[in-house]
Image 1: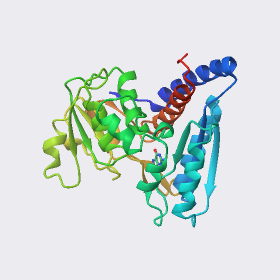
Image 2: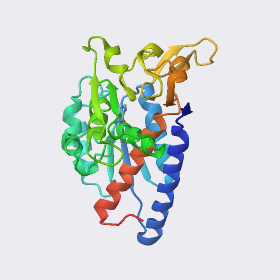
Image 3: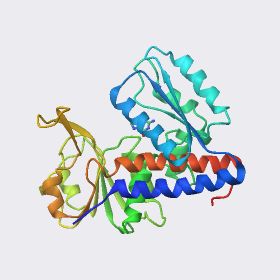
Length: 296
Ligand code: GUN
C-alpha cells in the first residue's frame, strides 16, 4: 500500500511554478496577480484564504485579500467583482465560498470574468470542461487528476466511482476523468445520497473518490482489494487529546480501508494541498494567456 503524499507533490508543483514565474519576471518585469475576496468571518474560510495568500507569496504571485463585512450587499459585491474584472493587476479572482445567505452565489460566480475564474466555477468554464475544451479546471478535481498522473496510476478503462455530486468536486472530477485524454479515459459512475445499495457500486470501483463530507463513511466492507482511494473529505471530529478539541478526518475510514488499498490519500496531507497548488497553476495559466506569453 502506498500513501499518496499530496504535500510533496504540491510542494514540487509550487517549486516548478516559482521557477517559471521568476524567469518570466526577469524577462518581462511582470508577475501574476490573484485577488481573494472574503465576505464575513467564517473561520474555515479565513484559514483557507490565508493559506492561499501565503502560497501565492511563496511562488511569487502578487496577492491581495479583499476582506468585506458580512453585511456587504449583493449589489456591492457585484460591483467589486466587476472592478477586479477590469483591473489588469489581477489575472485571477476568487470569491471564497460559502457566501452569506443574503447573497446569491450563482450570481456572483457568473459575474466573474470567465478569463479570470481561476477556481473554474463559472458556467462557461464548467461547460468547457465538460466538453473537453481547454479551460480553468476546478482546483480540487484538477488536483486529483494530477495526483493520479504523478503516481502513474492507470485510469484508462478503469472503473472510477465518485461519491458525491457537488458542483465543485463530484460533477467536475467525473467529467474530467471521463474525457478521452491521457490521464483520464475512465468509465465513471457518480453515486449520491439517493443511491440504493451503495456497496453494489463501490465494490466494483478500481478507483474510489469520496467527496460527500461525512466522517469515516467509507468502510472496508465497501471496497475491493487493490482499490485506489482518493479521499476529498475534510471533517472535524471531537478529540479530547488535542489542544483544539478536534481533529480532521476524511470521508474514508483510513485505518481499515488502507489495508485493502493499493494507493490511498491521507487526510490531511492528501488532496487538500493539491487544491491550492492548482489554484496557483490556474493563476499562472491566466497570466500567460492574458499577456500572450509562452510557457517557459
Ligand atoms: N470553498 C470551499 N472550497 C473552495 C474553493 O476551492 N474555492 C472557493 N472560492 N471557495 C471554496
